[in-house]
Length: 341
Image 1 (cartoon, rainbow, N blue to C red):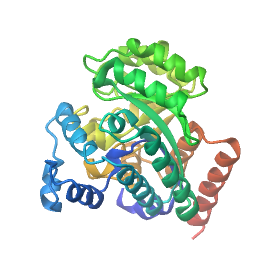
Image 2: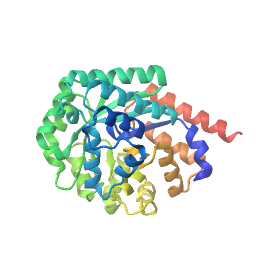
Image 3: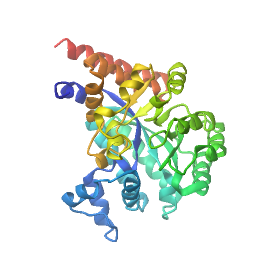
Image 4: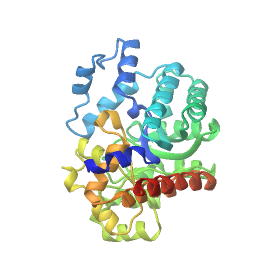
């Protein structure tokens, strides 16, 4: 794994499952906490690292929402968004579909138009100054119920920012059945957005079937339990429905007991289109480069195998055909140049 890290670090990449607030680096979280001293999030980096130690998925959600509470103004939103893009540029991420939860911000008092303007201003600056193309997935925080779903659908459809490409569903799965969100996904899909709900991370394959059948999912966030159902795996493989796999995240939230027990191997062996992602990278002490290294070890890949994984993310993305061809060409050129050394 270590031997491949230099190759991975320079490899052009795309990322499809990474959360907006969950990508806030310790430096940015600390800066936001200093701006808002009434928060329980510590400012000290050492205390912050301890704060980000999770006991289970429910505890992770609790900590995540405390960081969400630090983002209170359009200036906070703009700062966070651009700095996330800066961290991506350092990893040679060329394109990312960033999962944004506007309801969490607007319900805390950020004006909805100000929120849209902040993310769009950061998106345009990131592309112009950093060479990172950002697109948005607006997701429903499932734990907040149908009011949140209604608000998220309204914001996505009626105030649709230029960079918005998809509609998702995140948060806890236990006690939050997917079929209840069907009307909101129907509305988003009718408006031209793509369906990308989380499913099957902390629940069984039935949740993934619900996401496919009721929410018309085109990609599945996590899908960790899919190998428990061979029929489901075959369905995903045959229809080329990608899984957005986040290995370190799954271990950090206790969805998977250990990296060596991650079902990534079974997914790939079944022929499923798998993409590798970091989810909430600073919170889990990881980044996309590390996730590629983990996947390379689990799958026993060489450089060409890792490059093929990077190609999967481009294929599964909602980038336009010309953009896909450009990044695929960069991946191929980089790999051939590396191997010719």
